[in-house]
Image (cartoon, rainbow, N blue to C red; front, side):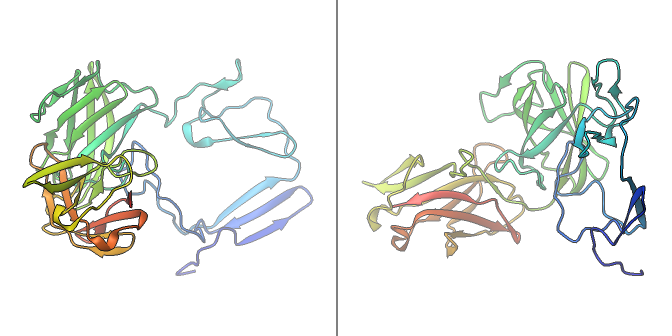
Amino acid sequence: MTTPAAADILRIRTSPSTVYVNSNNLPSYVIGPWFAGSMNGGVFMNWAAAVNALNQIPRMPQPAATKSNTGLGTIGVWVNGVAIFNAADGASYRNASGDDAGGGIVMANAVSRSAASLEGGPVTPGSLVTAFAQFESKLATSTEAVASANWPTTLGGATVTVMDASGAALPAEISYASPRQVNYRVPAGAATGLATVRLTAGGVTVMSALNIVPVYPSIFKQNLENLAAAQVARIRDGRTIYEPVTGPITIGPAAEQATLILYGTGLNSASTATATIGGTSVPVAYAGPQGTFPGLDQINIPLAASLMGRGKVEIVVTAGQKPSNPVQVTIQ
């Protein structure tokens, strides 16, 4: 077919000894996205392609005398107890001890995610990123956090270098380092496109990857329930009072001018932003750099009296036509 239609299985045939399954390798459903340490955020490592695939499955499979794969372990079992092994990691099964030897494509690496949303999608120049160790990798030689807004390029024995799409090797500033996690800032001058990240500690380099785009807003959250990491600012007796959001928000009288302050990263070059609360568009008084900490953005949303009693609502900030991850607050 010149333009093959998506299909999981095109044809199934049988013989007394074998089941034959034909497929064009194209799914009839949406797949992914998946993110791994060797993949750039939001970019697939592999793409489905039209092929003429024929799979032959014996109707009475027999256990192999020896098994030569794999370190990723068993992924299934036939009805008669024959194990189905994952062939992705290069044949690393140990017959002597009957376990997995590792190896193949299983390698020490790190995944880099937005420090705000923890999503594995794109990031922007100057945005905040968290790298998590995978497969026994060691990202730092000790645990250390910065004590000021001036972030070094070496912390806890760790350095981070971003190799951007232009080929430039850019040192990244680090705010926290430990053997299993490093928080760093994408260099502000990084070119957009696919980038490779080198995290080096104790003479060993661990690789990660980024997909750098111009704008991709991410909002900080406090917990897995997506409670916004936010404050409410109120005007009282001519002074601005800041209250952390730890529970339901009371808007209060109009004279207090209650404003919800969200914190995020990834606004980068966006000059404007919009927001919705519970699906309703609301004005944004300010969206831009927080001003004290590098890479940290601030979004100020005045809370109108019409929002009273809305209960738990979802907030989404959009910039550069890119919506942020949703966060939640409860408004009494």
